[in-house]
Image 1 (cartoon, rainbow, N blue to C red):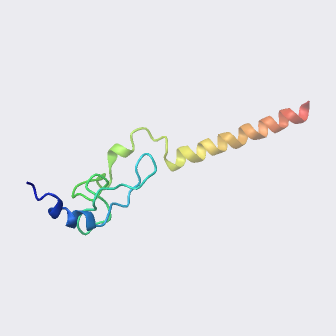
Image 2 (cartoon, helix red, strand yellow):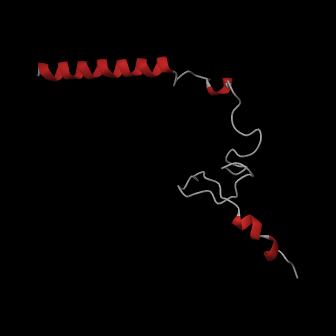
Length: 88
């Protein structure tokens, strides 16, 4: 007979990961020792993006300049629409 049940108490009592799953529920995996996340959600050593990650800037679509340019274009389009509505 296995003594599996008697050896799972420490794992069941350990703190749980604080991350949310895709379904919106909490992750039920145990957190890595000394951290708030499990090994799959960033608690493991070496997980996550490196500092100054060049891979995160592939297209520049979400740079500060690109976002401000899109806001200006959106504002100009709104003004043009209002002006056209006033001409009717």
